[in-house]
Length: 173
Image (cartoon, rainbow, N blue to C red):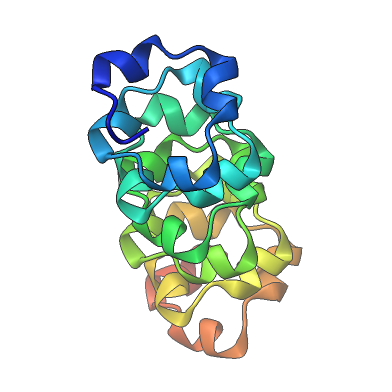
């Protein structure tokens, strides 16, 4: 697959993309990943999504990220989640944010946490909130903190609570 030009990758049908082996997906260049049609990204199997390299994951366009199924998002490895750009994090739908594994949430950088849309914060499962690192909790914006439900606030770890800024604590009042 890696020998295909970007024009040839664009020409592949959804069925052809679905037939690419996981080793073939792993061999895709970032330029090739960036030109895969959105409909083809939506048809990727979870094993194919998991086979993307971290550079390949970072090369996905925001439209391609939005096209990933929730199962595909759940299949992302920790290193792939960590490779998402802040624009890609913003592009995640509410259902996709809810599908990120707890280990994926724990791998989020402070910039990625701050990029989660406030409406998507509400969709975080309590297990995901509990998985936030102390720096992740500290990175929550006051708008994000205000959006947390009582159950989500209760899920913040003790070290996470200790990491809250005075502005974040004031936002909870």
